[in-house]
Amino acid sequence: MLRSGLAGVLAGLRRLATRYRLATCSAPIRRFGTDLHVGSRPRLWAPERIEIGDHSYLGHEVCIETNCRIGRFVLVANRVALVGRRDHDFKTPGVPVRFGHWIGSQRTPSPYRSEEVFIDDDVWLGYGAIVLSGVRIGRGAIVAAGSVVKEDVEPYSVVGGNPAKPIGRRFTSSEEIQAHESGVQAGRFRSSERGYDHWIVQPGHKRTVP
Image 1 (cartoon, one colour):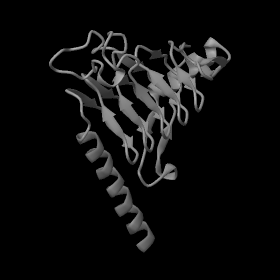
Image 2 (image 1 turned 30 degrees about the vertical axis):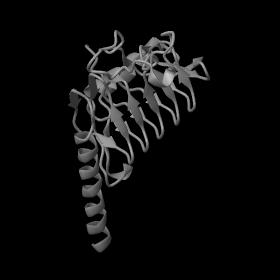
Image 3 (image 1 turned 45 degrees about the vertical axis):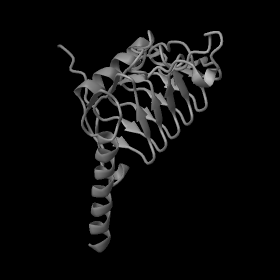
């Protein structure tokens, strides 16, 4: 009984920590879904917007320093970074890069201010991956640990390396993808700060017409 009570207290503290970390996110537009988890020591900043969909997870020391839209059921591992590729001007003659124009300037807005990372639903970004602004990661894709993503990633592909290149497919056929998406759409899923053994994982089943 004591152990169960302590687990409940710790779970409650983790929920409060996530709420605090989202509340201290620095972006003019902030939209957050339900059933989210944000790990310790995050850096959440953007010149315009940060959006995170339902049932998504951000691991420890995740760094977001660009506009981003993150979908539902997204798994962002520890130390992943979403960063702007044009945050500092380095092409103005006579101006050292340290003093080059910054993307977050209010006085002189950058033409790249609205550039973003878009991560579709059901994506996994592996440990330490870096995704540059202007990239779209398609639905169901997986990015291997330590990869640097500079170009769009196709849905349900697996990419890895620097720069990231296709190295495989998550599913081998369109029928598998259809069955997976049907199960997700009709299913019931809910995480718990008590741990995975307390999660609700109930995939739906596609109804067939007789």
